Image 1 (spheres, rainbow, N blue to C red):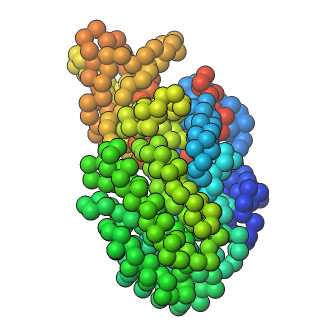
Image 2 (cartoon, rainbow, N blue to C red; image 1 turned 180 degrees about the vertical axis):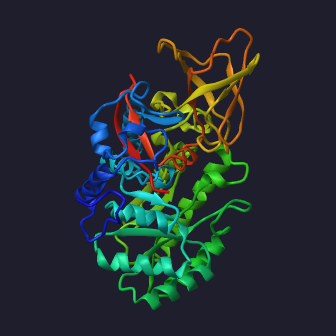
Image 3 (cartoon, rainbow, N blue to C red; image 1 turned 135 degrees about the vertical axis):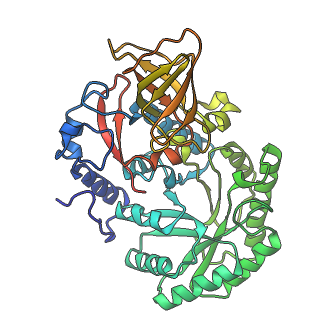
Length: 441
């Protein structure tokens, strides 16, 4: 059997069965020095064999720092967003760049996802190597080598569906030239991206969007399939601004449809929605009038799968709608106290190489005694800084902690957690490790 780190071909055997087969091969990966935090005495075992041992995260030989994912929280979050999106009439293509973990992408598809969103062609290559057949590429691709690969992939697999952004006439020119040079046989389905002044990518005005659509109509290598964008990058984004922008997006779709710009497509794609405003997306998309063909209302939230103890805990739409559910943070980074050199201060053996800090510092959630294994909350402890390999923890007066104790940190920003860890233990509430999640960054 091929090892999990070998390139998996895409020969048209994707879909649920192809995804499952490719993901199953990840269990053949050999455990060794590449994967930090794992037990040194497990070197040489396959991931599948190590998972079958059901080791304890705390007493099974893992070295600190070690990142763990909560099996229970993942199950809860996957089920919640499946119910939520279906209940609001939305298709779902969660952003895979959050995790870049095929095992988790497979679970998202099993929980009703239409497909997976990507930001780069490199990410699409990972998805295809693990059998993903539907991809929304939320970026304009102007790299000739990348377009050549996409053309070959589309031509080789008639069941592969891909949508990608366009936001400029020049981008259309570059895409057309590259696809013609590649001899592409299938037109590439494109979605005009609407942006906002001062924001991220996307054509700034409806007139700009129309010019891009005209450019698409003038070439045979591209086919206009819809409109989309990302509301969270609107400068000063708030409820009022986001709703107004979303209504511009849906009005643009209706205008393009009325003008016959989507001729020949089986469904029109209208896509938006990160992890901060998916409630607004649901509200506005529900207002859309019927168009000439069915509309694929595509939500792209990605961070929900693990949620967090920082940025997304603060801005999740479920804070505004608690009656619809609650996401649970699934990350816990376990480090140890390695120094107590002065009163009121402790130092942990985890730092910038192990935890994200771009959207807030870690927070102390739990302490596990090195003496007796008892666990208590993290009250009275605050992470105030990070070095490459250390966390600086300030202690309230009277807070007891000693060298050797394990400290469980809650983290902020899932996207920059996953890319620091190549193989992540999946653990149940009692610390039993049941699987290992492989990432590809």
